[in-house]
Length: 113
Length: 111
Image (tube, rainbow over all chains, first blue to last red):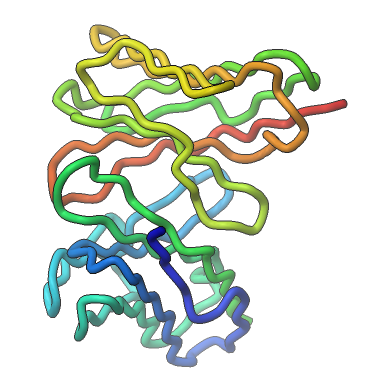
């Protein structure tokens, strides 16, 4: 079974702090994604990566950056957290061919005070 | 429009059938998916349908695809309280790009 893990289930940070959200997948997938989920807005794509050291902006990249130094790990960085970044963050991975199913991690609920 | 659209809420009684509807946008989408999200959890793939199929059945789940109208539906037979969750419809537009998700339908099952 594919496993996607995220470093924290719950996180509380202060405005202005630098925040790292880590995601690891164990199935050698090329593609990895970061979404945020907010009530009434569904899932919105922040960034994705289709290979090591490669990244592409999604629909809402402002205020975020990402890092993919190893194939299995995709990090989301909030350089200076703000209260409007309080949200549920979901990581996903997917192999590049075939059924294109995305496998999701359990999510990190981030609260910025 | 550009969005995958779903109704936001559905409420049913235990034992009834639930039907969740979705309209998608890209007629060339190869696969269409239904994901389920239980409270406090990530999304899990429930079922999917390949675009050259009209229907797919998997135990209590039936997926119907109308390509002409770009309409996808998920029917859950004999709905149980454990089916209470958010259900997301998604389409795969291009290989190598992210799936496009609807906003999710919250299914509430009362006993």
